[in-house]
Image (tube, rainbow, N blue to C red; front, side, top):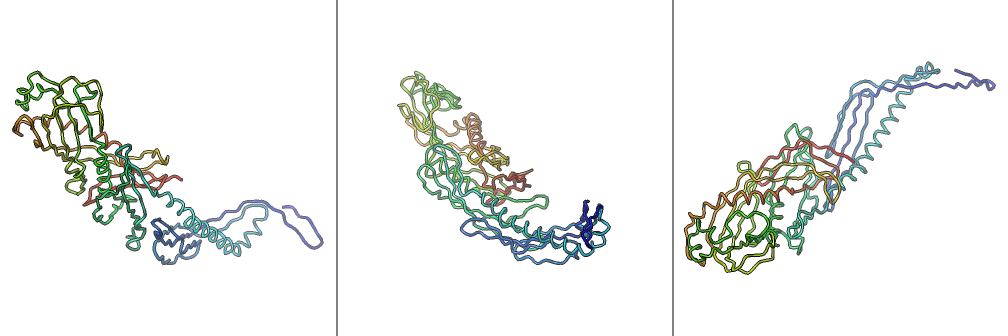
Length: 419
């Protein structure tokens, strides 16, 4: 310690350190949540930081966050003049305690009113799925942002409404979403996200409307087609065909999907996720000359042939659903994406038209073993593209588990978030 005399005044210069033990800390924030104009919004309705005083009950109006730390508020000075400051510490405790509490109150209020709303503003207002003729646009809006329950049983609910449009002509998807079940989050998870299968069905509806799934095959086309594409090849299943065309002509196959009856996805605890009524038509024709190496064509490139018969095939598909984190190519953010893989597949055949007379359906059942692996591979290709979930930018799911509920896919998960 150094001293300099100015008349009768002694000025003290000193340096050192100060230790502050926060002590019994209660930090509480009352937060009001709302959804004005289809957006999520939070407001700090009351913030209280309590250092070293006896804890007391805090009443929150809508939603509460409370943190407790143990100890007692202590101030200890070290350095040249610490003996003087420690004498005055009992007087300084109240001033320091109030200053720290005020700073914490301000920081927490700012975090809620500004930072939290900046994060909520990342919720997308629009989402795109697929491309080309299968592109679907989803308009998203917050339909509910509220707190249900009270105390430890309180659950924050963020509900989003969606309208799906065919991106090609802006037609609105007519498939209505059924009522969603109540959210019940398991204790060891932070979040339960629910998705209506109707959103997924609308993506299939778009593909049906735009004939994005229609295809054309010939024997010379690149890529494997599982069914016979010569008149002789069909002799095992339809003997009359080889009799009418003894020269063993090449055949083509046109696969179409009935736009008037698109399939729908249904979720349930017993059945999982099932795609019902995947209705297809296989049109086979006899070609008078060998088709050129046109490759695999979609939605066009049809070559002239003589129609021979048409098969209607209705598939029912069961899916395994998993959630992974992927980077969104449009936003650049990591986010959760649902992936679908076929676990069960069945087919039912009918003869729709025939120019060679009738033939027995029993003879077609042998086609099932040929057709199902081909359809499974095709469906898995589209399912592997994934369905991105509307989420906050920077939010990723951690250790997610997908469970099936009535009319909903529920994803129980912990979350990580990066600014």
